[in-house]
Length: 447
View 1 (cartoon, helix red, strand yellow):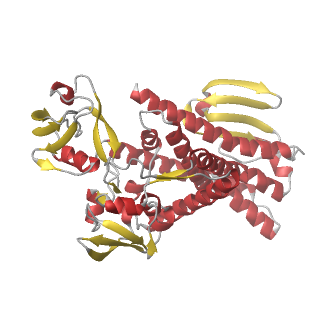
View 2 (tube, one colour):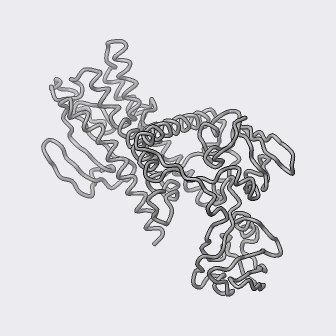
View 3 (cartoon, helix red, strand yellow):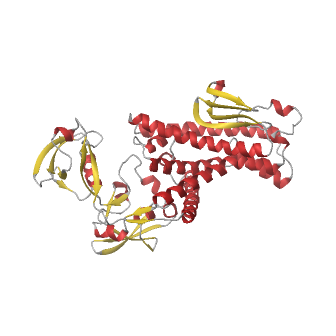
């Protein structure tokens, strides 16, 4: 069931993103009187499709290959590589008969819609949910941070009190340390207090190469406490007599202060039988023996706590939400562009930074959470806008590149050059798809 929910979320998001992207091209083309022959969600490769219908001049349908979608615009060299119509005189309703500025608007229509979608979703979430955070001074007075193994490799330790990021006092730690402006900055200095002393930690520029993307542990987090919320029937926790409301005090005589420290201990003893100290709701304690699974779990849902009544929530007006949503959206695009630049330059390992369909689907997870769904969909919409505007033939950005050349020089690019460029671009994209699928599969198999 969990796999079905994950796939449903992924395909719903993909359907929304692809349909709206292609709708941007479609509406722009129709606004200038250009005939659109096909509008497809997913590709009808080799002529196979799930269903289709025709309305007016356009055939609408759903293909079987879920790697995107397309609109086939009359009189344009696109991924169909159909050049037959180009051998005849241009018709007034064809793409090629329109002025360059109109063709440019048609080509950027999809990217514009993706950016608008990202802004609308993020602004709506900001307006409806506001922003809730644990003030940094509260984190510091409640044991400091939990530092994951990745964070510890970079010099941070569990219990550190973070004071400043790049000389700026910290108010909302998790938001600020995860801000793209900080993560993509070449300088990433963290001022901390450790054992009563001020210390400066300098994170490496290529921080992405040092992160463990397979780990379920956050890079850093407040030191949340927890208790057992619900025990899964038949699990090791159930068999050992652990009940709802119990507190787990230690694992193999190792005490801990926070939930993520506990998870790390379970991972350490994965596939082993350990002694666990449990305290029930009456304060009574007992030792039980549990065999931890290979995945580092014992079979219960936690109830996270430790900061009740100490969180702060900020509510925003519709106007302010739109401003913040726009700022966040363009900040995400900028961060993605910088990250892509680091991949291309070799500063960051592509295997650690790219995700294909499998990786993206896993991000949605086995639980249907609408806030998570829309947040991730907005992120993907903005990433899709950036990827499509890259100056690679076969992408929207490739067409834009040729059209800008025409606008600047006053001469259109030769149709033979466009045709060859489209082939080269498609081969490049195919190679990229193969590489990304390999990254997805190798990551899933632990290579």
